[in-house]
Every structure is written in C-alpha cells, then in structure tokens.
Length: 548
Image (cartoon, rainbow, N blue to C red; front, top):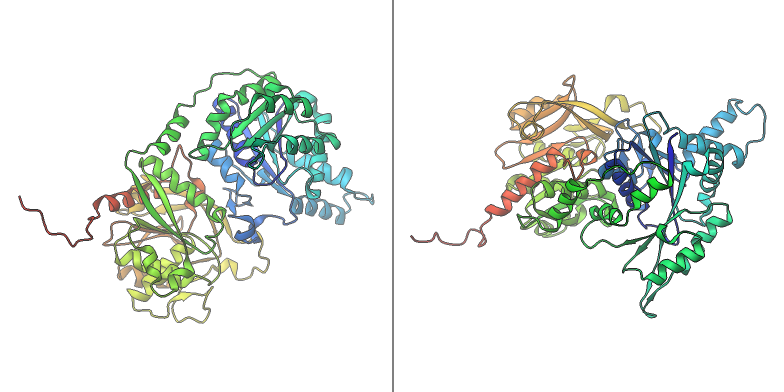
C-alpha cells in the first residue's frame, strides 16, 4: 500500500515547507523508493495563473500544461520528480469540482457540506497519486496551523489517518523556534502552541522539524518532546544553512530524517549515496572560476520569488561551469530613466525573463539593444525573446514602429502578434499556450551546440508569438531562426549573428533545470558570460601594450 507523508506548517508562513518536503523526497529517492509529491493550496483561485507575481511569485508550469505553485519547482529540482495536474490542488479547484457535480445532480438532491463532501474531494485528490509503482506520496498542506482557510485540508488528513491506517500515513509538522535577542534565548512556546492547535482538531504530529537561526540546546529538544508529545529522537533541528538551499538535504540526512521515516513505515532503509549532491554543494561553496555577474532585467524584481526558477537555473549553470553567479537585479523601468543604461555597466551577461503588459518594455528593449551592440552574452525568455525581435526589427531592419500587438494593436510592423488560436478566447485562466511542446533545432546554431540534439521539448506559457509574415525579412537582415515547432510554423528560438552569444527563446527553459542536470541554454549562457568576464581588460582598453 502506498504510504503518505503530510507536512504542515506552524507559527509563521514562509518557513520552507516546500524545501523541506523536496529535501525529504530526495533522500527517500536516493534510498531507492518511488516518491510522488503534491501541494494543497488553501486560496480560492482555481490556479495561480491569473495571480499577480507580486502576490504569489512565479507561476510554475508542468509538462502537461498546468499552472501551479512555485513549490512544485522545488519538487522537480530537488527530487527529479515530474509533476502534473495531480500535483497541485487549490481550494478553488476543489470547490469547483464539488459545485459542478452538484449542478449536474451528482449528489442526488443531498445537502452539500464541507464535511463530508469537500473533505472527501480532498481525500480523492490525495489518493489520485497512488498507484502500484509509487511507494510514498508527500503532500504539503499550504498555509499555517490556525488559518481558517486550511481547516478543510487538516480535517481531511485527520480523516485520512483513521481511514487508511495509522502506520500508512505520517504527520510531520514544520515549526519555528525563534531566538529572542533581548532575552538572549530561544523560545519553544510558539511551537508548543502550534502543535496544540493541531492536537485540538485531532492531528497528532509524529515528527517535529524546527526551523531556527542558531543551534538548539538539549533542553529545547527535551521541552519540545515533553510538551508536544513527540519522542525526542523525532524532534529535528533545521537550522538556517550557511551557503545555499541545496545544503538542506545533507543536513537532514545527518540527523537521519529519512531513516526515521522509513522506520516509522516499517520499510527497509537501503543504502544512501549523496556523493553527487554533495559535489553540488561543494562546488557552490568553492567554485574554481571565481564569480561573474548577470543582469536580470524584469518587471517584478522587488519580489525575488517572481523569478525563482530563473535564479535557480543560473545557479545550476554556475555549478556546471564552477563559477559563482551573482545577480544584478534591475527593474526594467529604471533603464528608461536618464543614464539608466549605466546600470548595465560591467555586467558579464544580460538575461531578460518573461512577463506580461507594456510596463517596462522600453527598458527591456534598451537592454536587448545594449547587449547586441556591446557584444554582451544575452539570453531572452518568452517576453524577453519578443523584445529581442522587436528591437532587432526597429534598429537593424529599419522598422521604426515595429511592436507587439499586445502593446500596440495598430502597429505598422506587428513582428509579435496574438496566436491565431488565442483570438477567440475570452477566459484568461488556463487558456494560454501551456505545457511541453516539441521543437526542432537548426544546424550551425548556438542552440544546437547547447542541446547536442535536434529534437527537443520545452514548456511554454504565452499568448503572443513571432509573426511569421516578417520571418524572411528579419532573416535577411541577420536574425537566425534557430528553432521552430515540429511543423515549422511557430518560431521558438532566434539568434543574432556576429555576436559572442545571443539567444532568445519563446519557451521557459528554467522550468527544466536541476542542480544535477543544468539546462543546456543556461549552461552555455553562463559559460559565455564567464568567457566574457575572463577576457575583459581591467583598464577598459586604455592601457598600452606591454613591451617585451
């Protein structure tokens, strides 16, 4: 029977349930078990697709075209798990299913209630992950213990424990043990109260993972064990890691978290080999090639989570090139100000990520032009690719008014236009070109050099595309069409000739990058940026050649 782990959070939000869940999944997979993961989000939106990046962070897209919570990115990056529509459920999704069934007469006139109908639907979502091949399912419950929005999920997993057997499911509670500077001590009371909230609704955590800034003392473990009714050996310390998030699995393994979970389920421990993962951590801590700085020019820079997968993919590429990648995070609108381009001075590479709407587009166009003219390695993604095409059309092809119909519907040169199949769509949620699509790469391109194979598959999230009516004109001016859809109708990748490395793609390569397998485009982009940094003259070209 498939075993289930439920991870809840307490005291405060943003404790890192997703990272903890992903780290546990990695350790269990390394011990030979088939693990699946899912996230239950308590908000009423059906999915995060229409939510502002300022509120929710990035929207992570799965292969099957589901717009999901960014924690699924952690699941895939850490554990190498391929997520799907069954990996993320929201309250909006759960309630929509129940209400639609009621409208169709599915409840035979019965009164529809939170218990049992909503909780039954939540349990159905949980067991949708079960199959003969899956050994363990890890389900992260969003929100914080005590939130009214999370109560149906907590009630559902309480019922699940009783219905599926006490030894078939494990409750892990992630909590905070804060350090009070004025008192000079750490406090366990918030964690005790958080566990008390769960116990009050019938959930008895069997393992407690404690986030903390500094090491816990023996007295803290004893007190938490006593007041939370949890064996002391199952009170786990999760101290803030010193260097990077990829240290978390290593630290949990040192405390035998994976062993204790398998012992709870009466499953064989098997061997654990973290050599490859430890190499990742060691390379991040001590890169051989120093550091480089990449400018990331976005529309939502003030919230780092808005580009979470971008930063992680750059870090992965840094690992493969043994270089520390530093980020110069620049608001696109700041480049539009007087002397705004000074913000790009001395960067080793420029990356334009995705986004929607006209705000900041001029800044992105200026960045694309700066990278092209100053021979700075460049990677454009989604809107970043569209801006690269618009800039090229305006400044190389002489199409001064070239634009996207998203920003200027009446433009004379709509080099970026709404996809034909999008023109009849009215609903905004879940209706873009979403998920994995095949792409064929062209010969003699940086893209083919990076991937090493002509047929690839990448994840998309967009409504607008390269307008093929201008394809021949742009190619004649020097723009290389490096990748197209399988039928050659949709332009997926463009490159600029006579440049050290200038690639822009319509898809989102960051969603398929992991620390153990960095994405090819990011790997080569960072490699080109490293080469750029290494060949820079320290005197900015003002020095005289040295005499023999």
